[in-house]
Length: 402
Image (cartoon, rainbow, N blue to C red):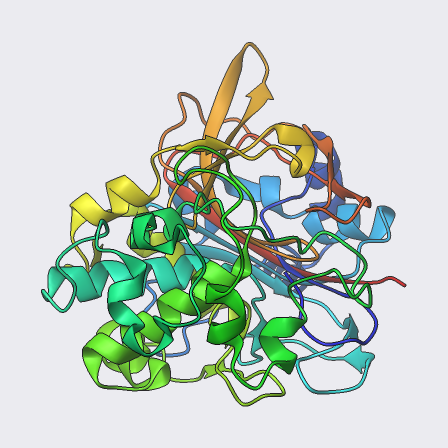
């Protein structure tokens, strides 16, 4: 879930914060009208396709106004918080903080609605959407097509067992390939750095032995996503950037974005996407609506449903509490006497797009749970709270670690 031998980046897009309505109400009493607008995160209209509304117009009122104070109290290095409800952008706040953008040195950075941010492994969820669009366009017959069909030049190097692996196995991270990216970055046994250092990373991946039958064991594996990125390029006859722009980003009104490359100049399909927070929220809205943006269908609802159907328990990640679909995460959080079910795109360091399709009341309560960082042996405090019905929340964070 990371690239490069430098200090581990803790960059994030997350829906994780705790707030108490009483504390928020007490805080807003201290603000003038102009100060309250800033504190309560009333979003600005910047012509990017979002319909904006005040939180109270969708039933949230002033309960969001204490977010900045709560984040400060927990010493969270948060870059942005964006909330969408009922199809409207109703909250956004941005904060200065330490960051290490892709290819740049670490330091203090300012963030606003126009600032792009590393998405890290949220890129994987976007690749899943692009695969779905390619299938919709009949560029790919279906997700059960064999992987090797799209890599004919590697027939001589592929390990035994690869003939049985399909695109769906890559999407669900159940190929059975021998792969370990949970080790220290400089550990020579860590496979992930090889995606950026090998002159031909596809040869490296396809030569890896198959250690388990496909569709039997879940193992977090970014190399499968990189293979999927190459499949998209092969079937479309376009670069990943060109296909993503034409098929997904342009229809969503996303014009300021980047998909970075590894040091070996191969596109980093699994981890290289950079988006503005408001644009990342459009990805969430597309999934929430199950295919459309502003009334225009972009991807089939069937593909969305398949992608967000739990297929494996994510053993070894986040305490084994989450589930995995087709490059999308699923989970649930206890709230009062019930539970909140959510869908997420997640990346190293706390990036999150959290989507909550249904919720049976309009209460936001202070609920959080500590979870383990993906495969790193580190515990990040992630505050999962009860979100209102049909709400998307994103938060950008960065933490410096060794």
